[in-house]
Length: 205
Image (cartoon, rainbow, N blue to C red; front, side):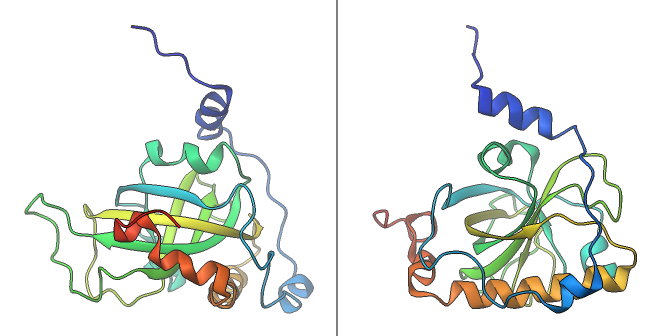
């Protein structure tokens, strides 16, 4: 049987292997970033639902940037990369236990729905050769959660992907991204997505 791919799926697969140039972040722009972004109600193409087993990445988020991230597998990317641009996004995420018997156990707090920020792109500062989706869950996990399943719902866009002249400049933007995400997600139309069926199994909002 021959499976015909849609144009969006084909474009998304191509995006995994084509690294575009990224503008360089400027200090004056970082100093005047807004504290909240986007409309008061999510608009198309949001919400976007992602899921997959957490993969091992480069390990740079926690070690270099103080922002540990979870990488999703390539097959989880088309729902995002086919309808959006590279950059930083916000939403909610939940880590659920794997049944493989090998992954690190999770606590009850670990498995709650938490705010998240997500980078979809090439990490130009590190010159990645492949598109990645890296999610930072705003919760203090005591141990890693590789191999466990992650469910995420992306609700809005924060900013485009940028390159940086220093690691300190990158960290400054990451910390702002976190604050912006938290501010955005307190709006009632966004906060209600913590109860979305992807997390609860109840009927869709």
